[in-house]
Image (cartoon, rainbow over all chains, first blue to last red; front, side, top):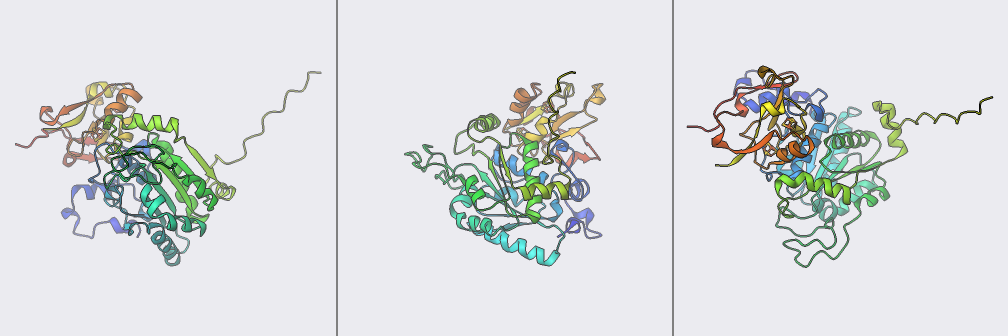
Length: 299
Length: 107
Ligand code: SF4
Ligand code: SF4
């Protein structure tokens, strides 16, 4: 796994599809790309069967642009809508059995460290709310308690969208869904608080209607997981099918939900701040210059 | 037939904010060209849609109308577009792309 794995074997170039040639020649491998350059370079994500207008698709697209070293990244996922797109990218994807993605990622990240030493190889789990907070809950929590060094991203559409609309632990109380016709009786699980209690070094919430912010939190989470410990991002990625949101209103919904109950939040330990500052030149955690002293009374 | 997004170069090139390129859920579907627009005498380039990849969600229309406040994108039946960009005819450059526009409907 390195930049070389995408390159053509000599003599084969002319047989490769145009999309592949574009990706090798004008993709993000080995360069720094950012969301502000979107539309002018070839992305690693290809066409996929996720529904039109899905906010989760947009989030996955942004996440892949945000990976600091896409050529040195492996994604891990599980059953759910997201893997339909995550698997269609020029980034190796490991499909865990339902619920064991954080266990798989733990082994993978340890194995990569043994094999490659200090050379960063990033492992990023992207799974849905059901995969992370319900069926994968035990393995997710234990990976955090063990301080496994990889990033967990929850694609939170607040429903089992792939199987017809059952409530998940992340569904809001009172939500009526096709397979929860009486409305959910319990509160949405507070996975953010659990991530902090379990010792994650970085925890953030985002909504995809702010691409630059998505980029910034994913970069930080992946970099911190290289050395400091587990990192967790919880992203609101609405299911426009199960929640009947017209596709041209998906971003309006994201904005409303962000203002209402999915405000941006970021938690970062002092160790992680110091790591980002010293290793990757982040300036935002440096002490702010002291406020000017109140003017001395004129003599 | 089905709807795809169509960006008016004349309206987009007056602003050219590139917001829609960041909000389309599909990768490499709304692309940006420095040339398009400039060749018509506008100061900036324009965004355009690779219609073979567009899923017709109209999210870009909302973004251009409400966030960019520029109203440059409309949904149009694909057979009503005389010419459009298709992935096969797009060339990537260093910082921009170019597209040779062709009829999007075969036959
Ligand atoms: S949002 Fe509208 S004005 Fe901005 S680049 Fe897209 S089409 Fe052009
Ligand atoms: S209609 Fe949807 S898929 Fe098509 S270009 Fe606009 S945002 Fe992208």
